[in-house]
Length: 467
Image (cartoon, rainbow, N blue to C red; front, side):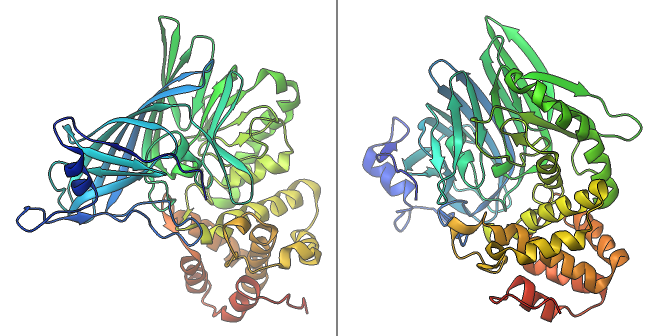
């Protein structure tokens, strides 16, 4: 799927290579005293089989990144705090393309083996189930772009002095090691050091900004759990503004590339209104701050719902901002358990656009539903079962996903539907959910058996009649 760099083997200096291979790959003979077992090298996501790892649950990432825009070189230290979910003799992290310089686990040097996108680590002692452990990975290199199965690009997108790190679905492994599956969410602290005069924006709140010896460090803190695919770093000559929340309103931090400042004025003006309307519709905003990062059109080529503040490739439509901001509830707070459940993010976001159009332009949601129903592109597969990784961002995931929600609304009534939507966002706040969780929740809260609706609109292969 992805370019695989040459095999590299490294170890603590005192260990011979043959022993490192045996240890890292789990070759422990009788009498070795090892009682744990290696964590799985994959979580077997139905569409991205290589991402994610088993045997542990990450609690916190502390990333220290030093970036040189003139060369594109990144020097990084990732401190990963995790809890072992079974006795571990070895475990894996996802990392693509960078050079691992050293690894420690709980302060002790660990053997490691980096091949392709898998970084396998063997601590000196087994990690016991339930134990919290700290892994520190020091790494360096020029981060790469990752090409998705649908040919879009992600990872580390560099254009001259500017760079943006984007992660959906697998790109975060291009700039830091981690458990890069949406089911393992964690808190983050990200410190980015860049040349003085350059701005570095990330998720959460800016805790500190300081300049010394011609370089500036920006310390960002995300207390709420975050899936790695919505982690973001944007580096460039951004102009920033922070508006503190008042009277219960959330604070808003915006960063805009000066080349698109004029065209971004409407989006910045509409953002507080959008957040307020979405809170009224979906319930309290799920994070401690909101905002947006607006880059240049060539920086990514697509908008992405990065946590706290979406990344937009230049000025876009207000509807696009509405879509990406709705993901703060549906996708970022309530995160899919696997990439098969992406319709739970995109269907809700598309439906939010329909609601906004009704709210601002008096176009009934029913009309948007009929327009989506009439579009042949929405009927190439059922939204709950995209055929492959190539299709997880195809029209049925968005348009037909939104149609499922409208059919639920028409079946249970407006009052029950919006109670369900707000309850869904509240019940699974900062967690993960899949399609089965959703259908079970809707039926329980509505008191209705909706099996025929799911079979027809969510899983059905044929286009149903509107009668």
